[in-house]
Length: 97
Length: 200
Image (cartoon, rainbow over all chains, first blue to last red; front, side, top):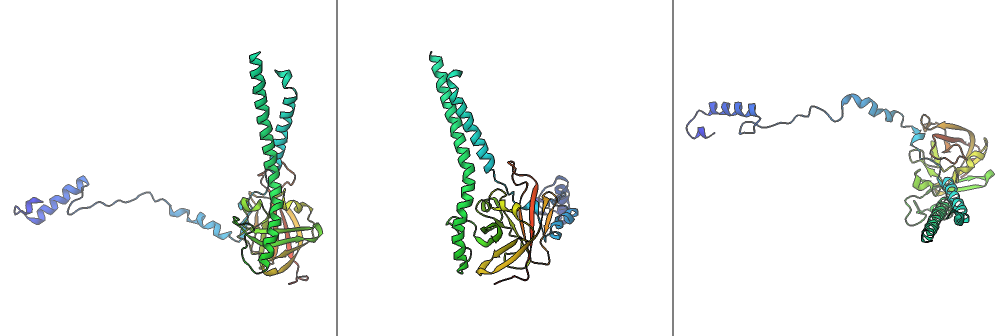
């Protein structure tokens, strides 16, 4: 670029700069970098499946409903089992020792 | 002799631990049922405020839901307050109104779900032609008559919400008396609006 001050031909210098910059991927006065994403995050051929829920919007999927059973019974049973075990262990603890 | 004493105290500690966990589990399990009953009392109070014109009355200060309807089944002596939103956190206190379905009192299909071992335990005793009365906002009463019940696999089934008639669908888990929870089957009761006996 300093060649311009030295009286070089503008056009010739510009071409030289572009040649060098393009071949080496450089950012210069006449060139810049553009990034192109070749792998789109969301491909267009999936749009049909994405739109599918809209078609069944007037239906409530039962799977989407919450599970309607509590762990209460199971917990009480588990607790009572532990209490029984503790009781039996207490009863026979002297024999075990 | 010393070794025996260590063994004995280890036994005592172990038994105490098992005892403590046992009490904790029984307490925790029972609390689910106590909470389900207790909450309904507070909800009945919140509901009477709702009828007096207030909207979205919170049954207790930190509640993240509010009563939307009152569910009455005369034959079974059922009188429950239905909460907005069918999530685990609301279902612990009362049946929940599925937000994507029609509001109680408006036309369309209204969907309620409840726990099969607390609030919606009565679903198995519900018979065709049973009367269900829904008291919606501002005291509007709608009579429904049970048309039938079926067991649906939640992995494949769906409930149509575009039913032309005003209907009420009650959903709970199935089988009722199973210890295990989280199964795929659901018990679905359908009731149609009774055109003749619609009061105000």
